[in-house]
Image (cartoon, rainbow, N blue to C red; front, top):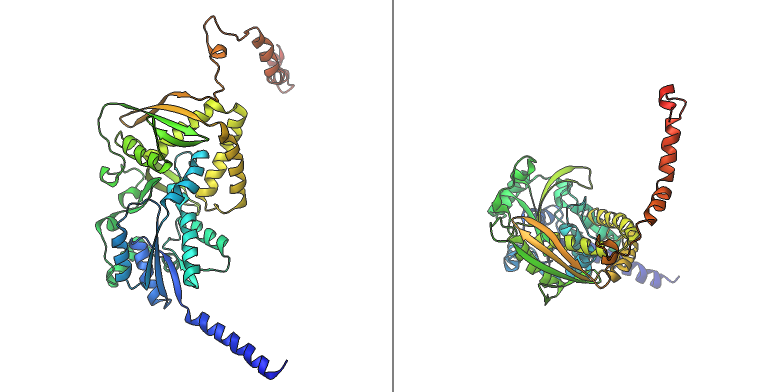
Length: 425
C-alpha cells in the first residue's frame, strides 16, 4: 500500500479517536428529584462530562418548567422534555390490562411499566445527541437499575451506562449531605419520602414507611381519599380486553384512567400496602396508590371469568403471573414477553362487555356483568323448573371423575403397613 494511502488511513483513524475522546456527552434520565440532581453534579465533577438531561412525561403531572429550570441551574448543557403519555397508555398500560398485570397479586406495575419506555426515549436522545453514555439515578438496592440497564443494553449493547448513586453506594442521608455541599436545592417531599408517579399509579417509600408496622400517614396520598360518602355505582365497558367507556360514555383509555382515578379514589379505593420481594433479593415495604388500575383489573378479570373457558382461565393465570413477573423484573425486551403477549391477545378477542361495580368506603365490589360472548347459560344454571340440565347425568360423571381417588384410598387402607384393624374395609 502506498505511503500516502497509509498516511491518509492513519490520519482518519486519529481524527475519529480524537472526536470520540472529545465527545464527553451523557444523557441522564432526569426527574428533578434528589437522586438525579445529585447525578448531574457527579457526572460533571467526577466524569468531567457534559450532561444532557431528559425528562419523559408518562403522566406524572410534575412541574416540567421547574424541572427544566433546575436542570439549567445545575449546569446541564441541554434539557429535553418528551411527552410520552399517549404512547405509555397505548403500548404499555393496555398490555398490562390484558395481562391482569399484578406483581405478587397486588402491585399493578405502574413504575415497572414506564421504565422500558423511558429507557427507549433516553436511548433515542443519546443517538440524536451523539452521546457516548447514558445515565440514571437508580440505587444498587432497587429494581429500576435492573430495568434500565437491561432495557438500554437490549437497545444498544455497546452503550456505556453510568449509575452514580450505585457507583458511590450512596444512601439518602449521604445524598442530602452531597446535595447541601454542592448547593443542590431540596424540597420538603424530597427530605421525607421518595415518590414515583405516572398515569397508572404512584409509588411512595422511605421515611416512616420503612417500618412495616407503621400505618402510612394520610398526607402521603394524592389520589385516594378516605371520605365517608354515599355509595356509587360505575359501569365499565370493554372491547377486546380494553376499556372503551365508563358510565355509558365512550372515552379513550387515557380518559378512562383519569376518570376512575377521581371516582374510585374519592371512595378510598386503590391503596396497596405490600411487603414485596425485589429482584435484588430484598424484602421491602411498598406503598402504592392506583385507583384506576385496581378498578380496571378487578373488572377485567371478572369479565374474563364470564367469557373464557375454565381451561383458558387456568392457563392464562399462569401466563399472566409470568408476564407480570417479567415486567417487574426488567425483562420487557425479552422475547418470551412478546410470545406471552401473542397468547394473551388471542384470548382477548372475546373479552367484550360491561361490568357493573359498587364503590363504598374503600370497598370495590363487582355486582353485575354482561357480554354477547358470555358462556353463562341461565337454562343450565337455574334451579327453577325450566332448567334443561339433566341431573341424572351427574351420577356417572362423579363415578368417573373420582374413580382414581377412590381406588387410591382403597389401596391405602389395604396397605400392609397398616394394622390388621385398619386393613378391614
